[in-house]
Image (cartoon, rainbow, N blue to C red; front, side, top):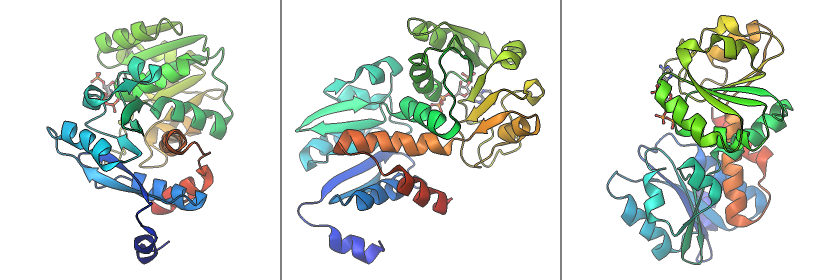
Length: 287
Ligand code: ATR
């Protein structure tokens, strides 16, 4: 649909959605979610809102006042937004971050679809079954928490958190330990664990454009039989994934996590299955 058609299709019945972040100028979410609404024939629209830090509470109250059905929340608001919601689902509470808000008749409920989006992408795009596998996560920040809790539900034999600062690795491993056999280690001492892992996931932004020559680990430990996964998707294939491929490992890029976190948000808001292929196509075309 071109812009003229979009303008004509908005009417008094249009259900509004959006993403709150700062900065928000490069977000692909409006493109992806508007395509999802178009593909499913829903009278809905999605826009990006640059919410300056300090004004998030007002913006969230606006969701109720304006009758928005749902909002995505991104950097830097994923933690603070929890203060202004009426309810958190269990996963979002455990992770300690919200990326999706559903307005249920004025009651605002927070969800986190990043981790489940990651696992759905991993399974559908690689066929990898995490159950019984040795998994190492690189990083212990917000992205690692979402992915860690989602992978912990899948029954891995071990879930090692390797992070530059060891205290954060230990903290996340401790939080995960009631769901999986988890341990935190310093990234600098992770060579042995990395070498014996079935799945290695880079949850840091090391290697993201413009720092495309950076890798979070020494790639010489990688080997065939492993799956190496990176949440970064600009570039589509990071140096880590290139190095992994060169050593015979299978690779999984970060675009699918972005697509499926949006697909779950769409499903929570609308109750319909997300048109994942159409969503992927339009985002790929724009990259
Ligand atoms: P996000 O929400 O994207 O995960 P974050 O919460 O700021 O962002 O976490 C960033 C993660 O990337 C952290 O695990 C950080 O390691 P520290 O806890 O030691 O800071 C990791 N990270 C960032 N830059 C890194 C680098 N150059 N090498 C290794 N790890 C790095």
